[in-house]
Amino acid sequence: MLHTQAIPRAHGTFTEASHAIVIGAGLGGLASAMRLGAKGYRVTVIDRLDRAGGRGSSITQGGHRFDLGPTIVTVPQILRELWAACGRDFDRDVSLKPMDPFYEIRFQDGETFTMRGDAAAMKAEVARISPSDAKGYAAFLKGAEARYRFGFEDLGRRPMHRFWDLVKVLPTFAWYRADRSVYAHAAAQVKDEHLRFALSFHPLFIGGDPFRVTSMYALVSHLEAAFGVHYAMGGVQAIADAMVRVIEAQGGEVVANTEVDEVVVTAGRAAGVRLVSGEVLPADVVVSNADAGHTYDRLLRNAPKRRWTPARLRRTRWSMGLYVWYFGTSGTSEMWKDVGHHSIVVGPRYREHIKDIFIRGKLADDMSLYVHRPSVTDLSVAPTGGDTFYALSPVPHLGHGGVDWAEEEPKYRAKMAAMLEERLIPGFQQHLTESLVFTPDTFRDRYLSPYGAGFSIEPRILQSAYFRPHNVSEELPGLYLTGAGTHPGAGVPGVIGTAEVLGKLVPDAAVRWRADDLPLAAE
Image (cartoon, one colour):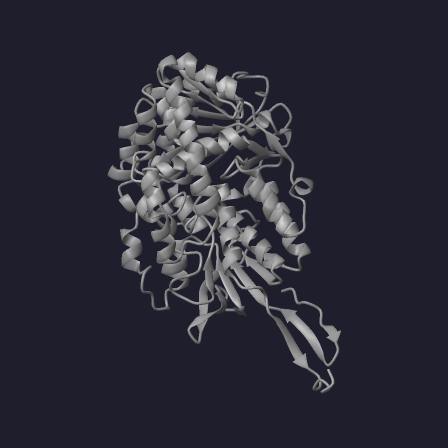
């Protein structure tokens, strides 16, 4: 463990700054460590995986680097602000490449929708698909910008742990019809079902049901239009690695292959952590970047709880699970010229398929896919001449029961392969070289996610802001929460934002002194 070197002072010795422990080296945990380091803390980040990044980490296999989770950056300024708070320049540490187009949506009936940053190009795209919806599309974007200013820049960047914080914003929630779902909001503006999908599917990227999460999440459309969609060269792993370097430059430490078993409680407050090995590490502040459900159900299992009890966690609605097939191909870099970095391949059903995933808990025969092909942008992800892909399908989380992934996985992969062959990359199976699959079982075991949920607690209106687990723990003084399960929520901007909120709640580090002799009266 790192220790700050003692610095002699007049009549005393500065021993060390206050110690903060961060449980979990996901993006939220790393960003929190940076914020705490900037506030003067000596920070130790502890993670059970072999490298930093959490769900934003990567695995390299057979020369293919598989980015395991998030693939895009939509609000680069929130990262630049984080680096600036630490006296650093993000753009010197990480290279972002703007995407154009952002992504292409391919519908079952052969229609396509290409999302771009250029406003004129988007106006033309909407007019091509449904000229009568041009006015409604413009109104949707205008409303998305207003929701962004309130929901992201205001609500999402300040603490929401006091009931009065909620009361103050209720009139604004009502004004923006936060009770209406994203899909209902899109459907009120445009009539074409292709456009309704294109304007409402985004909550799936943060674990939400588009037919039930609040219309405030329409703000994502403004994020894309205003700030673009970017790819970090080297993947999101490159961002995580750069975060580690900042933490180490601050005098902190990131410890891998080490698991925290419990938060230690002394005199009614968090006082450190106990590792699975039995070792106890003391701390002045403890931050959990573990899933909020795991934090309260496992890490605080021996502490009394008033709100986030096991019964309450069982009643909570969790985000969907994810089936992700990572695969590499050889000799394909000149194939599929019409397939770019990001593709969304839509299945034959939308509303009913979403019900299967979130409500019925049924593993459907059909699917919709998000396909990531970073090798068209970043040659480092694959051997020369090859490609690296991942294909992601939303599926029910494990809490619904009924899906035995050990049995279903090969069959589901065969269905996914058939869909990819037919709709996107014909002949790819003849070029397969590497293959890796994550199911909800993997998310449960690798990330300790309750029910194998892909994005922690689902962002419904009564599970957002004040209603999510708070950034400052309701159960234990000295414990703070960060990451997807707390406010403001999932997604790269969201989890980085949890660290910004955390920085406003944790007091500046105290300095410990050891008196060598009494100061002179004249002093």
